[in-house]
Length: 127
Image (cartoon, rainbow, N blue to C red; front, side, top):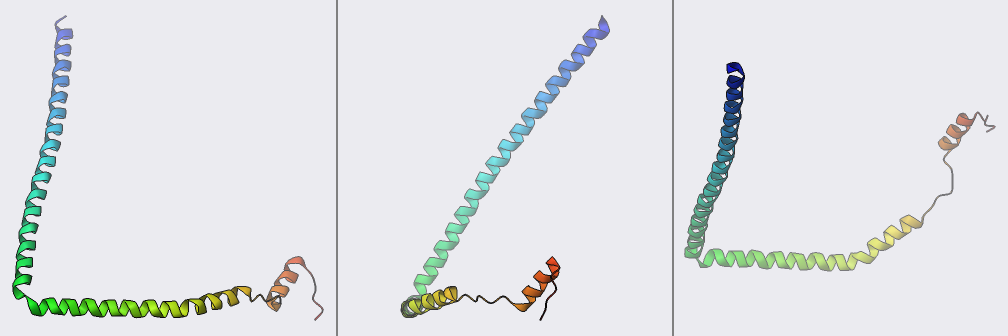
């Protein structure tokens, strides 16, 4: 009976070992998640610092760059207005061209198509 209890002890030890390994894996995953959260907080803090430095530097440079930005924005808005005006003036023309192309239907059968159909059905052409 000694060998039966030894086998049972080995199986119990194996079960405990697998539980320990499973707990270790879970713990490792938790530690990895926590490390990721902490790293993201550190990155966000650094990004915030650098953004604040940049904003302060941009404000300290002041007027010249601010007016350049305003000028660029004004030019962009003017170009957008021009594009919208051209769109409004050309929209109907584009619709007319599309409709004319859709309504143009040629009822002629190309000769190559006629020949291929005749060849397919074994009809001898008398042209």
